Image (cartoon, rainbow, N blue to C red; front, side, top):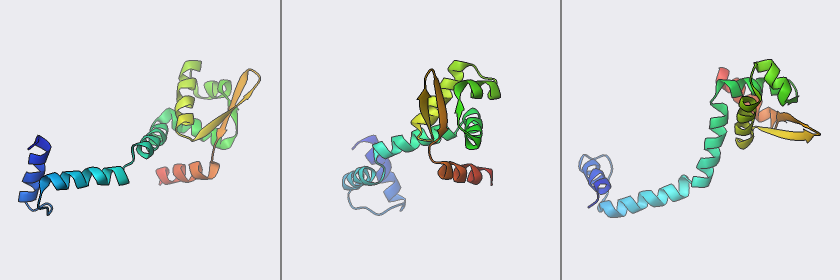
Length: 126
């Protein structure tokens, strides 16, 4: 019996769940994880929440809710360096919250789904 199975056996003996065979129950748990906790979806949600989980990125979203901006405008507004700005913008892009549109030497960023982001920001403040 593995250490994990021993822990499950201990929980079962305390009446935390009913099972006849701990090994079968462990397999059921693994199958449940395959069905309900898909790694791809979890990774996508992780990128999304990482993008929202930083004060600077929240401030960038606030600026972009007003209008489309290039990196230099955000750098000026938030008193950031170019590498720091690019770092935060990349995380917001990876999270699916913003998109960049190249125009010559400049990249202009905008909110990908304004209504969705607005609802999230409003919910976070309440």
